[in-house]
Length: 61
Image 1 (cartoon, rainbow, N blue to C red):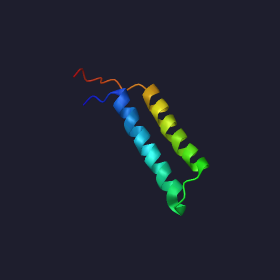
Image 2 (tube, rainbow, N blue to C red):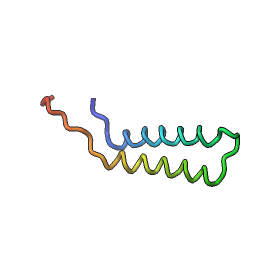
Image 3 (cartoon, rainbow, N blue to C red):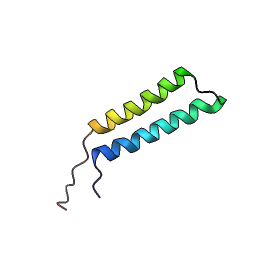
Image 4 (tube, rainbow, N blue to C red):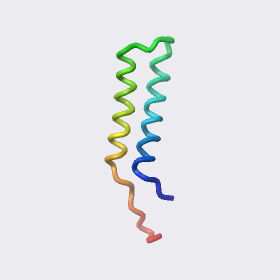
């Protein structure tokens, strides 16, 4: 199964963003600082995951 770098980074962004949002709204208030943290988590996950190349398949398949 071959997953593209874009799909991989989108999933990572959703995972990082949802984890940050769940943590941020524990007190039922989303402050500006928490919103910035969520945005940076998503952007960081997108960038890092997109930059890391997929592992090459050495089996020749």
